[in-house]
Length: 275
Image 1: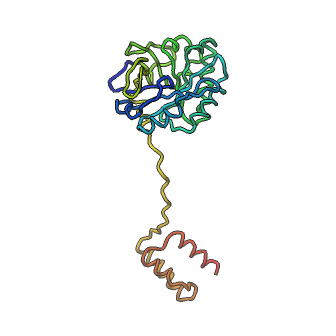
Image 2: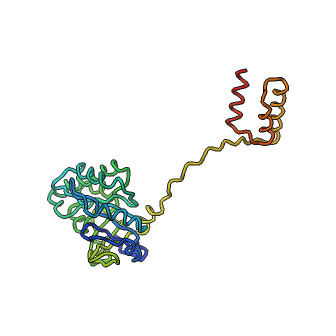
Image 3: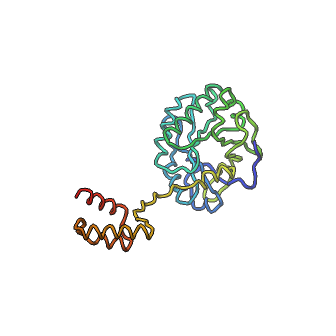
C-alpha cells in the first residue's frame, strides 16, 4: 500500500447521517469529489440520495455512488438490482462502489469473497459502468484474502484506515485508488463530522479527464474534382444537352460553378441511365 501524497485529490463520502448539505460551500472548501451512499441491502434507499446527487452535481463536484452490502442476509444479485434501480437516473463520474464491512464477516472469508465478485460483476452488467470495492484495512486483510483474492483484486480498492498516512497491507491489493483516512473531518457546508478521502491522482485523472463522446460529424456531400475532371464533366453534360438527352441546363451550371454534389451527380446518372 502506498502512503498519502501531496498530489492526491481531496474528497469526502456522505450519507443521510450528514443531514442537509450546502454543496456550494463544500465545493468552495476544495472538495473535488464525493462518494454518495445510494442504497443498503435488498431494498433500502438512502434518505438523502435524491438531494445529495443533484446538489453535488450542480456545485461542480465529481460524483461516485456506493452500496452498503449485507451478504449475511441477501443474494448479491438482489442487492445489485436495488443499487441499479436507484442510481440509473444519475451520472456517475467514478466506478460504483461496493461497501463491505460489519456483519458481512458472518458469512466467512471464502463465501464473502465470492459474494463480492458476483455483486461487482452484476453491477457492471446492469449499469454498463465500472465498479470498485470499499472496505477497512483490517477487514481486507482478514476476510478478503482467500484463494479467489486475485480475481477480486482486479477491481480498484477504496480503503479505510484512520490515524495513519499508509494503510495496512493486505494480500489482495498492492495499491489503493482511494484512501479514507479520517471519519472526523470538517468541511464547510456540512454540520458535524464527515469522512475524508484522498484519491490517487492517476485514478482521478483517468475518470475526470476521460475523453468525452463527440457529436457525430455530418457527412460531407461535396463533390471534389480536379480542374481536368470538372472540365470533362462540363463538356460531357453540354454534349448531352445538345443531343437532347439532358433537358435541364441547370446541371451544367452547377458543374461549372462547383456546387454539384455527390448525391446530385448520382441522381443525374440514374436519370440518364433510365432514358
